[in-house]
Length: 474
Figure 1 (cartoon, one colour):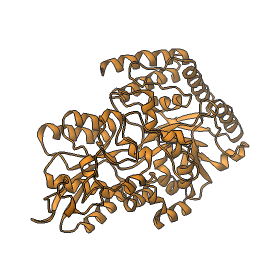
Figure 2 (cartoon, one colour):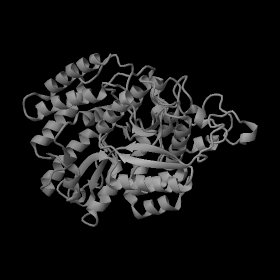
Figure 3 (tube, helix red, strand yellow):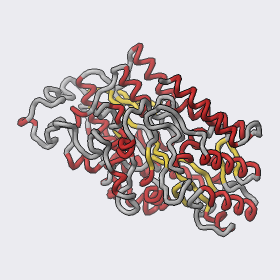
Figure 4 (cartoon, helix red, strand yellow):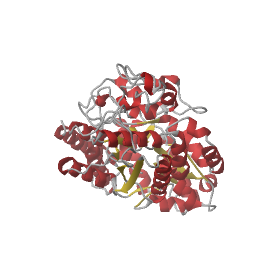
């Protein structure tokens, strides 16, 4: 899935950013300091504060949040799960929900309900916040979660995590990828666990190996300056554009690319933005030059251009690896790797993916919802989800399941994405203004592409417009 608003109200220091670093495990993992937790924040793999061991028998600790609740006593508890996923993603959800319902037969029935896009889902949740009819569980980005927190409609999960009967052990928590768990405990959540993992992906560059070889290259360039030269070579020697980009708003893409220069376009304390700088001008100039020379082509459906061999590269979410496999088949050889970086030695990309939240309903429905959250983030369900969709599994142990080991062996591009892209994926600054800021920056870039603004003037406009938007959300 593509960029979308993600977060709101950054309140902590630069150290806090380290908590949200998405870290790969096994081969290809980044330096250990990328795992450092934020100051005064719960460690990414630590249980909730004062949590009793989840392995303690109920008889020894009968006071947990699930104490006295007997699911299925008066018939199964039925709950709704609202999500935004169709096609192969929806098929994965249906399979996981079906497996869950079989395991909890007679106790819980989950009804999965497709609600359209993230915007559609958020609108329906906001309507339910006012008029009733909330589901037990829904997919949610961090910015949405903060909105629901403000309305006091979602349940902090720490009591469920530490529940002596239905909680998680330290081993369970250690199994969750640190960056994935950190997303559920961002500083804006005030030390609470406000969501639980659903799926994670990141921005990578898909490349047509056959076209690159025609131009004398094996893989995409490591830096943007090298990429510009490479793109011109590919177009000159193959007669095809080197890169396809969306013809709509590319503000979010530009923000991520600017981060590869070591620049935070949105300041960590949300006191301002940083789009008007020499690096942004350099990047915008590269984009304009490559578009003018037809080394970059704009298209409504970038995946169709790439998978039909009409462009040598496409930059987008790694969650599309499965669809790429289905669409490319044996037309050409292809791979996926980290996007070019703005400076030598820098390694960063965007972390995508929704989480899940538990709404305040009844004690029985909340417990049923928590059990579903826990199941969905478990290794068995995550291996199904990863195998079908191309999302990265939330747990380390999912990679050791027979299903995912075989899937990665059969589809080496998925393993390549996990090894070469995911270790460097980080969520960006949490801001309610972020989506609207991306739109304003994208509009400035569109004016530049149309020849109405120079690259320098485009980034000045991006700076002014994004600053104005940020002020609206103060």
